[in-house]
Amino acid sequence: MRMDSKRIELMLEKYWNAETSLEEEQELHRFFQGTDVPENLKETAALFRYFEEEKIRSLNENFDADVTKKIRQRQGGKMVSMTNWFQIARVAAGVVVVVAAIYLIGHEVRKSSPKEITDTESDPKLAFEQTKKALLMISKNFHKAKNEASKINLLNEAEEKIQRKPESDKQKKVNI
Image 1: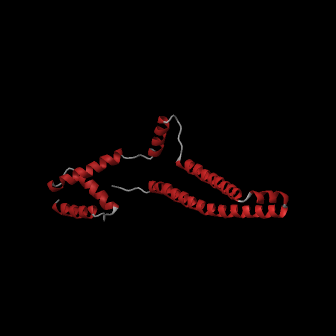
Image 2: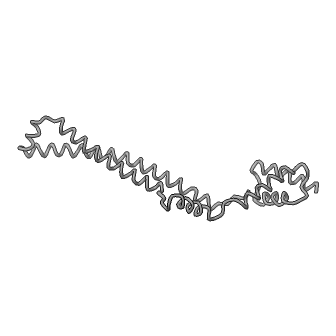
Image 3: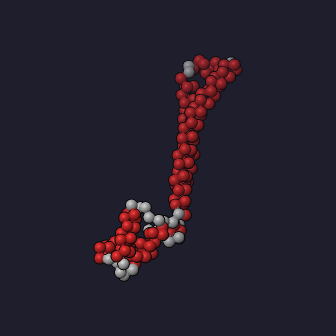
């Protein structure tokens, strides 16, 4: 038993340094579940027994579904996901860009003298030039808005990666 005790102490050192294999960890768990644990390892045995108790009480496979069900019960069956909020924010940002563009065009038109406005009513060529100028300004502002909207897409992609990561973590099982 003394030889086993030394071997267990060596494995424990590896365990605390996170260098053990799964088989070695299982061997440690089995050893500390036994009754013939040396006196100097009694505290460690209590810790390993605690790990085993917690593993039994730990999350089951239906944890996510159970939590979601309880949340829905508390909220009266209503749940709004964050992705819905991001979609609403994207649409709102688009509306803000369009409103800002219309405001800027109106501001530019008001800046021009009243004489030019009346000239555009009587001179089709001048009206065409003014319209062309306004459309170029809209195009330029929409290009800026498109660049800003691409930043929103980067945010959405990052959010999707973050949401996918916990799902892949669920597939991995770590033995304590």
